[in-house]
Length: 100
Image (cartoon, rainbow, N blue to C red; front, side, top):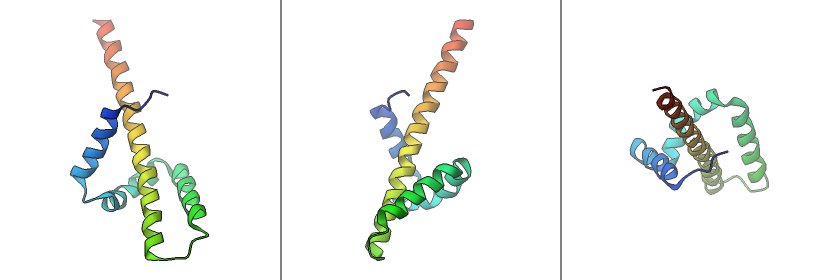
């Protein structure tokens, strides 16, 4: 797999900041689309977050931390997805230039 670049990471994070009012809102706005796009991955992420926080008492602070973990997982997925899509575009344009 191609390594994610700093530019790609910054671009994805900048877009999130421009499109949403913080990580919590971004997660809430994107979780449905992510679940439709990657249902089995969402199940795995949710199960791992539940497992990681299972021993902790239920509190607003722990719920916020679990939400933060979900944000990190979804944002990481989006960064990797963007890097893969950029590589696919590069390959597509490289093939097109070879045909000219």
